[in-house]
Amino acid sequence: MNKNNTEYREHPTIFEPIILSMILATAVMGAIIGVQLITSLGISANTSIIGAIFAMLIARIPINMFLKFKSIHRQNLVQTSISAATFGAASSLILPIGIPYVLGMTDLIIPLFIGVTLAMFVDAILLYKFFDTKVFPAKEAWPPGIATAESIKAGDEGGKRAKLLSIGIVIGIIGSIIKIPMSAFGVAFIGNIWALTMFGIGLLLSGYSTALFSIELSDYYIPHGFMIGAGIVALFQVVFLIFRKKNSDSAVGKSKKEIAATLEEAPFSRNERDIKQAFGYGFIAYLVIALCLALMGGLLTDMSPGMLIGFLLFATISAFAHELIVGIAAMHAGWFPAFAVALITLIIGIIIGFPAPALALLAGFSASTGVAFADMGYDLKTGYMLRGNGKDLDFEKKGRRQQLYAGLLAFSVASIVVLLTYENYFSQGLIPPVNHVYAATIESGVSSDIATLLFLWAIPGALLQIIGGSKRQMGILFSTGLLLVNPIAGWAVLVGILIRFIVLKRKGKEAELPMTILAAGFIAGDALFSFFNSLFKAGK
Image (cartoon, helix red, strand yellow):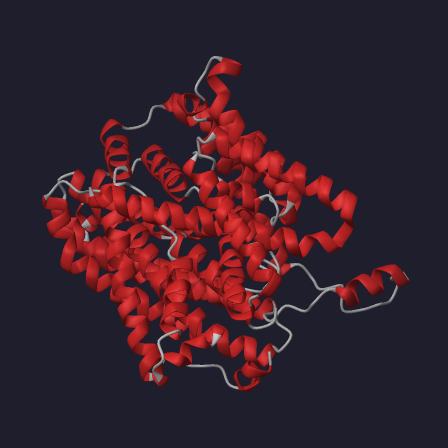
């Protein structure tokens, strides 16, 4: 890696003219793709690998300014940009503002657009502050981030790594063609086994509930109740992690084994002070956004002072809870139930008794948070691996900061694209399908029986999260599986875990790296097939 030694001392910046131009171009492309896919198909594609491949191809053009993109760190900035723009435009912006449109409350679209745009930026900044802390460690899976990093490494280094990745990509594409969710299969070789096992079981139970129990779990709000219970416990676990007293600094009373284990652990690049600041500033930022939504949305005339205060606090806490739940699921499984968790927030808001305009704003605000948070986590994981897994902490921090700048610039582009295009899409009936679910829920209301069911099923969800603890996140991942009705993905996860267990048992730890590279290929192949297949369908 001698060719990159100079860059380990000084990381490329987004303010280099060629990088800035490429970031803006890929951000526009990513935002347009994101809006098109979410409105026509109801999905948002992961374009990180597309961005990385694009940067690699540009680097092959024999012109000096393009040759700069042979740098894996410049490629990292480009893929960060297109990924942020795609998810930001689709899930953080146009999806939320479609909710008041479907409800006929068009006067709320611009106030909500302003609110969710601000929330998107706060989302990304908070992940930047939380990344590589004991709440969201850099060494955790973040599976799509690993897939992108391995793709860039393979393009840079070639050799055995490139062969393994290529084999994985081919298998991933073939599997996707025959309808096997290869992302789920690949994740099984990378993430926490306990968390992923519960994820797989949840997927199977949700998929086969009718055959097994003669009921649809969602009809009895079982997945929603489980997630409420697990989510509340997860919030308390995070708070406990942040505010518990530090006893690990002293070696007094510790055994040699405990001291060795402590020394073995790589230090986090951010400490408790950073986490507390992020929580404090994040809470204030979300509270201010909720207040802006209330003022711009005219809620002062719809609610009493007490109800207004309740709305502000509930919206703020919900945004944080949504962000953490989505972030935890994304970190461990690479999948997250963002739309379903926003629906849970909406149902609780209906039970509280907020008026329809407040519910429309609440649903949009909640739906916008978490996705940019998770996507930034994937991109920072990619950068973390490319920069040497934190071995050079100064270089790691410089690179992470440049990725944040690239993401924020891409979000700015995405907001402009959405503002200029949403009317055209909505007027043609191109609205994210999930918006009709939110609107129907607001219009139909929620009965006291549903509230009782949510409370009852929250209890086992909370217990499972307590049993698993903050490291395994069993309650959150089991609930995620229940909310995502995809039994084939459940089989893929569990079969993958079984293969992983057998291989490690027979070949030991030396098999971990080849398995990780192959798994990255499975995920990359699935992402490539899904992306181009979605573009083909949208084009038709």
